[in-house]
Structures are given as structure tokens and as C-alpha cells.
Length: 199
Image (cartoon, rainbow, N blue to C red; front, side, top):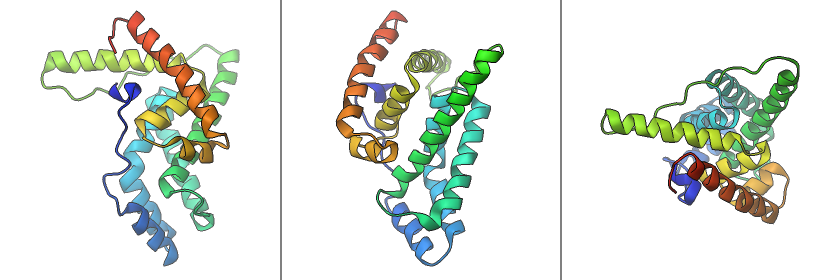
């Protein structure tokens, strides 16, 4: 939950991942480059997809679609951004596509039940239950945001992308994204406060 209030995720646990993946591409081995990307960014991409679509199975599907599309497009990677930013751009577009399809489906059929939240780390049972409750409340509040606001907040605070990086992957201007986040954060804070979670 702390990422909502300003702390940023570390860009990568392996600073050489970008170099290793690009070197593999230069050797003509997109499969090796993809393996590096999946190893280093796979979990972060899944977490982003899970928060965006709020369903484990759909998140897994979008996660797989993201890496399939990445593999198919690696040979054409133009290096206008980092591979990490490019990968999250793919994930973002696939999540938004899925949300659009889901909205259409919900207009015709009954909504699906909410999937259980993933547990956070905890020192004991009480901490684990409290963290699960906070995670569930945060997920509820995130779902109350418009999809584009939600994905911008997640990319900025959960994934630690800069506004220029998000602007490149979303074809929007960085100041517009900053305004979107500035408007979304008070809504998230208010929602969490209404649910009894102090910032």
C-alpha cells in the first residue's frame, strides 16, 4: 500500500537485464532476450496485470499475451525506450483491451464474482490477516478509478516508471499524466479513509 503514498518500486533487481537482453537480440537470439525479460520482469508484469484486471486467471492470460506479443515484436524493438518500459506498454494495452471487452460482456451478462486477493507478507496470523484486508481495500479503491487513471497510478507507483516513460508507452503527454495521478491520489486516499485505512 505504501507505493500509493509516494514510495517507488525498484526498477529491477538486476541492473544488467537490459544489457543482457539487448546483447541477446544483437546475437539474433530473441528467445534468449525474452527469457531474460521474463526472469527479471515477469513477476512485476503479473502484479501490474493483476491490479489492472482484478482477477487471477485474467491476469495470467494478459501476462502470457504480453510476453507472446513481446517475443513476436522483439526483432522490431526500436530502442526509443527501455525494454522494461516497452514491456509494460504492451501489458498496459493488453489490460485495457481486456477491460474494454469485459465492460462489453458485463453490459450483456451478469458480472463475475471478485477473485480473492493475493496475500501480503506478515510476521504472524494477525499481521497476515490485516495485510490481506488492506490489500483487498486498496484493490477495491483502485477499481473505483477509471481504467486509464488506474493504470497510470499503478505504472507510476507500483512499477516505478517515470512520467516520461509512461508518456512514451501511452502516447500521452507527461504533464497530462501527472495531472491524472494528482487527481486520482486524493480519490484513493478518501476511499481508503472511508474504509478505515489511515494513510
